[in-house]
Length: 588
Image 1 (cartoon, rainbow, N blue to C red):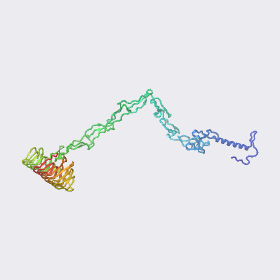
Image 2: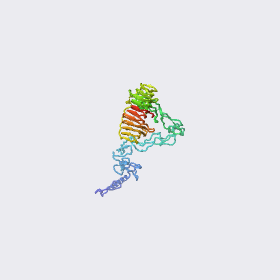
Image 3: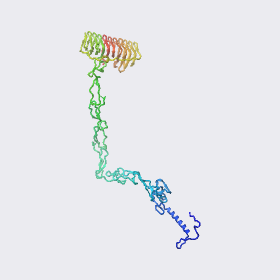
Image 4: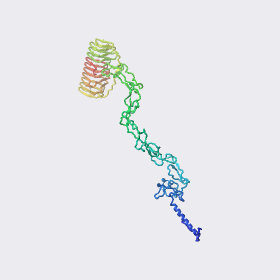
């Protein structure tokens, strides 16, 4: 707005002095003012046309991406498109410049954006340029992030330059540059692109695909047909003692699977050095290892007088064969023998009847077993017409033979009487201490008494019982197994039979064992005969008994009545049989 002061526009005219023209001074001022305003308005419309005209200090040309819809340039905060657009203001610049919205330079030191991703912290300098930025670290991503076999992602150089990172010319690029021609190279050209120069003759054009395929080479620009190694061609050599060589099949590019041996690779050095076997996975034979200490290398022989030998852990050889000491107690496995002792590694026994003090075979009695009286002062007596079977032996410090009696072998220094020795006479053998060889049985009885009345029958299962009494003609039927009785008495014609089961049957009797006339003690069928272990001082079988059992009564006086047959081994303190009694252990 123009304000005219009083006195400023005077009525008198004043001319400007141009020759021939007179113009009032006031009028000339108005003309100049109008002209100046018009010129300013015209120039303002020209800012942003890319042409610097007075009074423009700057007027950058903007590329299409920074043009607005009407053909003008977009303006941005500090000239940075990433900070957003603006229309005016001291921080509103043309893109990537220090030129403000009114085509004047911003002042020196103002923040600006130079459009270079590899610089930071740029400011306007005294010349109106966006400069003085700091170079970012080498390797900082810039430009394109795309990468392939011939070009990596763009990164800053560290000197303010964005590098395109193209790989060197001639670098193989089998995926990107493949042209399907086997005798051309598929490689980069050094500018991010591909090139396919021809391969020289002899260059590999098809690599081996496996151990049974070989590489083909170019010749005259062509690649030969693919061929496999012939059948039987070795494709994997032996790698160790437990490995085997593999050969091509002629039909497969791959070498067959690597197979390892599982058979013996080192023979045994001795009983305590086992042979080594390949493990099926390794090439080498396992280390030679001796058997650990305690591993049996020689089992005991069938005789119980031989000992097993075990490895020491430090020697391949099994220790020397060892045996039980001479005269040690053993078991020859024959239920009918007692006095079993080791001799030269063999369990030797020929005694079925062993007593401590005195043994007497009654008139016309029969002895079908070996008999031994252990006491050095003991005696064996055979009454009138008593008889010992062939191949039996009587061992005692003294033997007395009644008229008409006969024995086979006599192992004694002294035979007296009127009988005969049909076999040989030899020295009294060294017998083991009776108490040591036949310890006293320790028997505990407890439980209900078992009392059978005459002509009664009862079944009994293994267990502990009190007094057991079986009256005339009664039957006590036992299941196989262990029993303990406080005492056992069987009256006339009673029967005590093991009738069921296959387990060993033992009747342990804490007191005495007595029977009446015609009693039978045995087991039925193939059931093993029972063992009668008596801790008392008396075992008495009356006349005409049949006892098929083993008797172990080292503290008892054993009396066998007239006509009684005892089939089984005998251990007793003393033995007396009556007329026509028979001792025979023929269970085996």
